Length: 200
Length: 222
Image 1 (cartoon, each protein chain N blue to C red):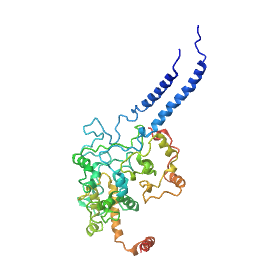
Image 2 (image 1 turned 180 degrees about the horizontal axis):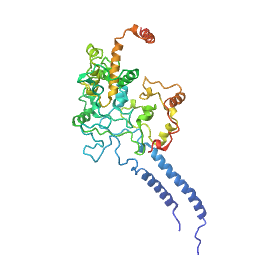
Image 3 (image 1 turned 135 degrees about the vertical axis):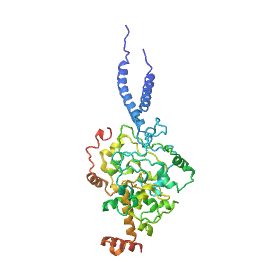
Image 4 (image 1 turned 30 degrees about the horizontal axis):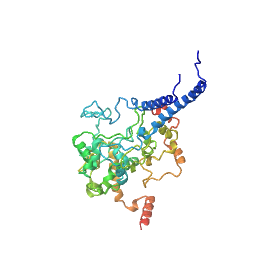
């Protein structure tokens, strides 16, 4: 009984190919029958695996009773005060959030000439206009929550505490643009002097 | 009775032992190699999308922060894919009649989701969490590459386990200041540290990265 040595080689190669092919076929562990966020579903009619909450649903721990904190209003009128004391941490958080979500249009200084405005978005009013300097702080909270004019609501992306932080930071921006050089701390005065010297 | 084994049988036996071992090694080698090719990992492949969204334009040219759209990246496992409303918060005003954005306007008008093709898809037995990586100072760029320069999105890394382990075994080579997490090396406002290993060691202490845990199976597979 004599075997053709070539047959052995061919059989071997075939085995290698079959194994390689098989290794790429089984994806059951890769794609388990559970829905990942935003994964397509072939079960629901709208093909979303995520079910929209029934209107009026309140998640446990999310009952919003504090009108001032959650709506920026007190007895229906725009609040003139913050629901909690403004701290430096809150201002820093506000600055970070403002730079992410607001600066694209309102610009980092709040003059309303952000990059998206330069690309065709309608120019928002400057935060340094007399009307916006005088407006109740609750107005800023309300606009982030509900939108204003061409600005959409940012309710889903900015939670209430961050909206207050942004409102506080807008107040800080407003103060910064009208600040008196002599009232600034020594170190800031020196920094401004350096910048002025460089620019001259 | 004739001889069962021919005079060449000894040679054949030895050859088959060596050959068998070689065959086995080759088989695993080929499978391993095929598994790491971009054909399988889908690395560097641009996938078809309903809208040719350009990260380069939105990040580099417009300066929009990652979190403007990927809003849940700091607080949840999932970075967050923006709802159509996020696109429309600018595109209701800007490029309002661009044919390219027709699917976005349609989606907003009808409430039917845009069906994006997922580019980074880990196996379901990996419990990856964006928030922990972000909060411990791993930059977007470390895993997603220079997204700020991608006109169309692709997967920069293999996303294979040995790639994950490169960093889980030596996070000090990749860890950044939290303030630099959303920056990209090619952007002017990012300056790479002078001494990454010194900064890395310092940040690992500062951010309390528990290196002893990072190679545990259960850190990713639950």
